[in-house]
Amino acid sequence: MKKISFIAIALLMITGCKNDTKQATHETETPKKDSPVVKAPIVENTAPESKEIPTLKECTEKTLEYGSEEECIFPKSTMEEVYQKTIKEKEVEKSELLLAELPKQNIEKEINQDGLDIISYKVSSNKIEIEFSFAGGVTTLELEQKGENVKRTIIHSAD
Image 1 (cartoon, helix red, strand yellow):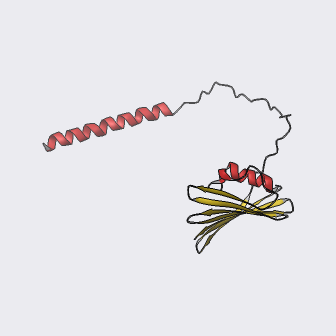
Image 2: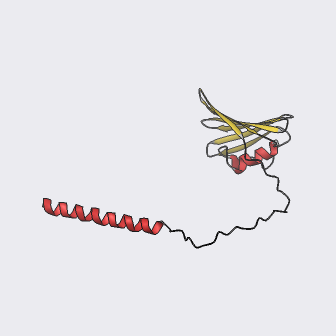
C-alpha cells in the first residue's frame, strides 16, 4: 500500500512539474530581433480641455477616540468641483444620496433608508458642512474654500 501511495504522489509531482513548464513556455514571448522599432506620430489634442479636477491632492488621516478624520487639500479647485468629485468617486458612504448640486442655503433631507436617517447641509460663505446621521453614528463632510484651494474634511464618528 505504501508503494502505491509513493508511486501516485511521485506521478502527481512529475505531471505537475511538466504542466508548470508548459505554462511557463506559453507565457514567455521571445522578442523578434529583426522587427523594426515603430514610433507612433504625436498627435496634439486640439479639443478644448474639459473642466476636470486635478487628481493631485494632499491628504492626512487621523484616528480619533471614537472615529477617524481625513483631511485633503485640492489645489486650484472650487467647492462645487470637489463636491462632484466626492460624489463621483464615492468618497463618503451613501454619497449617491447627496443633492446633485451644492445648495445655497441650509437644508435637511430626510432619507430613512439603510440606516441613514437625515442628511443636513449647513451653508456659509466659504464653507459647507454636510452631516450624514446614521443609526450608529455621524459622518461629516466639510468643504472649505481657502483662496484657490479647497480643504475637504471627512469625519467618521460613532454614537
